[in-house]
Image (cartoon, rainbow, N blue to C red):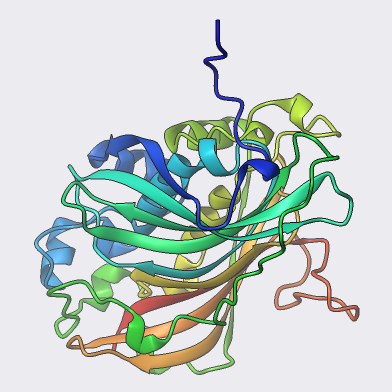
Length: 344
C-alpha cells in the first residue's frame, strides 16, 4: 500500500515558479473574533463595535486584520513550513478587502526564491501567498521566507534565486476599504485623542504594558489558526525540547499592546517587512514599543496613514534594537514595519 500521510515538503521539494493551492477553506464568523479578543488584549474600536464601524462609513465591523492574516497563514503551513526550522521574515504585504463574518478564506502560494544554506542541511524558501474569499477576491497578499530542513543533505542544491523585494509598500499602493470615512471619527469612544497630525516622523512610543506568554494560550492560538508546524507542538522537533511560540502570536500580542499610545491606528493595511529576531518561549513577557517611520495622506476622507515600526521585546530598555555589531539584541523578539490608518 502507498503512503497516504503527509510528511510535509522538504527544501528539495520546492521549485521556482511552483504554485501551491492550499487545503482546507475556512469560514470565519464571530467566534473567531471572540477567541481573538480573548487570546490578545485587542481593543481597537473599529473591530469591536458595529456602531463605531458604521460611524466610519463601513456597513458593520469587519474581523480584525490579523484574523485574516492568521487564517491565511495557517492554510499555508502544511505545504510551506511543516518542516521549518524558523519563519524568517515578511515583505510586500497588503490587506486588499476586509474580511466580514461569514466569509470563507483559502490560500494560494507561489515559490519565488530558493537558497540552500552553507551547512547543506537546510535552505530558505520564499513564497508569495494570496488569501482569497468565497468570491475569488484577494483579501490579502504577502511574501514570507522560511528556513526548511532538507530530507537528504546530499541532495543537489537548486540554483540560488533571491527575490528583489522593495523596502516598503508605497503609500499610493495601499488599498483603503471602500466607504471608509474618518470625518466624524469619535476619539472618545476610540480611547485616545491622538490623531494623524499628532505624530511626527522619528517619534518613539513606549507602550508600557507587558503580557507573559503561557503554553496554554499559545497552543490554543496555533490550533485556532490551524497552524500545524511541528516546532509549535512537538517538543522533540527542537534540540532543547522547547516549543517555539508561533511568530504570529507575538505579532498579535505586540499589535494589541500598541493600543496604549496608538489606539487610533485602527486598520493595518500594509506589511513592509518583518523579522522574528529571536525565539519566543513560554514564560517570556512580551513588551512593545513603536517608532513612526513615515506619514502619508490618503484619498479617503479624514483618513491618514502612518508607517510604523513595531518592536516586541522580552524585557530590556525600550528603543534599543541592535548592538554595535548590527545584530538584533538578544531580548528583541520581533521587528515589524507596517502601515496603519488613522483619523486626520
